[in-house]
Amino acid sequence: MLNRFSRRTFARLFGSAALAPTVLPALSAEAATTPSTTGTAPIAHAFPKGFLWGSATASYQVEGAVNVDGRGPSIWDTFSHLPGKTNNGDTGDVANDHYHLYKQDIALMKSLGLQTYRFSVAWPRIFPTGTGTPNPKGIDFYSRLVDELLAANIQPYCTLFHWDLPQALEDKGGWQSRETSEAFANYAGYISQHLSDRVKHFMTLNEMKSFVDIGYRDGRHAPGLKLSPDKVNQVRHHAVLAHGLGVQAIRAHAKGNVKVGLAENAEACAPVIETSEHIAAARTAMREENAGYLTPIMEGKYTEHYLAHHGPNAPKFTDADMKAIGSPIDFVGLNNYTTTWVRADSGPRGYAVVPAPSSYPHMMSPWLRVGPQGLYWGPKLIAETWGVKEIYITENGASSTDTLTPDGHVYDSDRVMYLRNYLTQLHRGVSEGVPVKGYFCWSFMDNYEWADGYAYRFGLHYVDFQTQKRTPKLSAHFYKEVISRNGLA
Ligand code: IFM
Image (tube, rainbow, N blue to C red):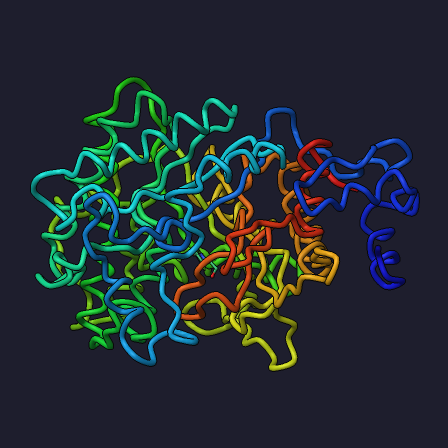
């Protein structure tokens, strides 16, 4: 039963007609079923025909089965087992046991109406020590996963690196060594060779900015290093180099046409007030605030300001490196959760980032400050700045406490509000012609939120980590409605 508050919330989301008794059974704890659209609010925000609606997860966050079928250890296995490194000492040892439950999960995706699913391959399942002889059972798992997705009519979007670096490579310097970039290209080529007959969209690396800055500079993520600025910049360089070499290897080994891109949490710079001077500042900021990652990938060079700013600590690179880094890509994947507010400034850069006031609203994760306008300005400025013709929102979502009611429901009205506001901004861009072709909600189900462990829930489905039962939250019902109507009220 919906309580009074929830009933009001539900009415705001779906219109008062949505409170008709026919809709309430839609809040089934078994699977999100589509409420009747009879009498629901008209679709004010219709997306173009063919817009792809999806959801995403990542290998270490959901698979578990870390010692199964020849998988080697990753830096996250090591790091999460070190005392005091993760909330509650949580590890990904079991996670969602998706390695064994993938068929059930795909059935749930189908019932949600997902048209596409973004997963990542665990490098240490394929090459247990990062290079050398591949493990046939590793590729076999992803091959079965892809077949199951296709049988469910869900398009697979495959990410090659979502932070679970083989520990053996870290022992040889990890991303501090350019050998890791070369090993990545070898691995990427292998995956392309084995999956590209069925997978047509590949993303090289997920969120370079996160795994480099948090893992190698701040030490809060694996491998837990706090390197000096010169070394961090070199790690950054090896990450973008891995991307570029990976793009080349994927194309070289592809069977048929594939599209290659990345999934980067580029700063989504937005004018703090939409006047021409602040908009111009946001345009400049878009290049400079992404100068370590997306900008060199799109331009094949570092910006003058980036090199001058870092001076003797700037990365060491060759012309050949930059050529590889700038390898043409087919699409940009933008992971977006927050907005970087920018104002015009009379200083040499011409812009300033507006610091977030302490009262700024955020979701459960303190870093996740609510700023839906990033989904408008982020893709718009990526398209305008670099002439990108195909963009995906490869992640967007919200963390919350999410409690299960005694009768088995999760009324995550906060996440519904969040998604509604962000999708409205996304629609604003798409309707103006910004070439966003699809959207992946993070995440399909609650999972291992890295150093924050299992307490920070991002899923459309609630997961009981004791029983592995998945329960669609209110947000799953909302998202199912968005997908089936290809838009929202
Ligand atoms: O869970 C992460 C994901 O692995 C990368 N992007 C942000 C998500 C939420 O923190």
